[in-house]
Length: 587
Image (tube, rainbow, N blue to C red; front, side):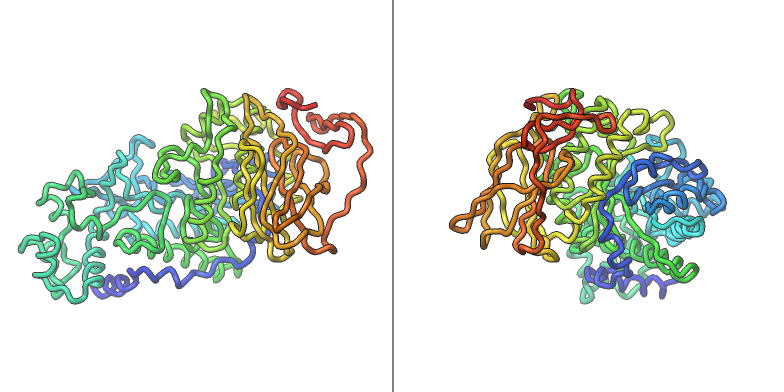
């Protein structure tokens, strides 16, 4: 056992991420439209998934409290029916919450679960009675997670969502007092000796105020927590058992403090590097099982921003630290109403950059996590304002390199579905637009230039598309007064190397693409846009052969109903779509 731990300890380095477990290269490059609908493991599939028609439903079923312990537990229609409609319907695993009935014995269960700095187990009755956090350092618990993954692969799941893979360090009061089990303590001893190979026992005593009776001895048995260093004993002797992450603790910097649902490959502390290593082991083993047994790939994601995945799925929940250490209000409100004036652009840009730095060029998908305050806020919106949320916040995600997962349902009893909320057809129409225009959001290089717009209540971003030599400028309207107010007579300017061959507007609020007028002088391109409802993409072509030519519009002051919505056109003005009661300021 000692030799095995020493071998695994040699992997605890900041460079381990360079050995990627070979995600499915390129497959996610053509997927840009996502939904979220989760049912129970054995339940019939949600018909909303096929009705809305996104390209992927990110978590269709998920294990919980021994549900889904064997392949026969699953209703395989949940995977096969969407697949018949070219929709990837993923499975899911709760990768940190575990219950006693999932283990074969009391001793196995106790081996799986986390400990605090006093060595006690950590109850999570606030989640549900009997819940515990699984300990990712436990080989038994990692094997348990892998077994669930194998079962879902056997049941036909084309993708697996590993939920909260690194949540076993939070403490049940979010004080960080968790993860201090024997497995982590033994690995910590190896990690310290590897990091400081020239240190003697006297050096460790001197540098970290260890006592002679509980000091790390590199020449001793590093796995023996009685005769060698025991970090829990160290914390207790210094009075830090209840506050192990105290800044007074000199070993805290070495131990580290991970953020829930985030891994940072550049971190050099023990918890971050070891957790990343064990996560890689789980991913490698999952891929290997699917490839060996079925000769097929399995798409892998996790809640948050993690490495080694085919795409990341970022849960939007309160108490996050995504706004420069403060909470990002992913469902912004004014009272109980949706507040469309508040832009999430800066936060979305930062998430995109973090995703690239951790996982590489893979999609990052946003979903409203549950049960959360943010989901309750969303439920409280009227149907009109729920759709305003997706047309504004969803568009802003697309406009900054992320992808929204349109919400259809949770597996919580009593939670409303998109049908119950009266928005299913509106979501279908919106998803259909993004699916038919998915190439507008693929293969983009961000932050290559800066565009400006004449209205302060319009968010603007831009990206290049090297495969077409096009530049895309994204606009999102934040002019909101309990309903989105149309912006008129906008001017978009940006530095450009030459006069373009053509400029085209695409919008989910307009029935057809159309050419836009522009001027070019002294290295600056100026584009005129007569009106903007929710969002638009301006595509700037430099190759005359790629310019879209559109027939002149001759319709005069007409309107007609489509799918319960109204399309308004005035003279040669552009077409846009909105519910009659939604729109203020139209002609």
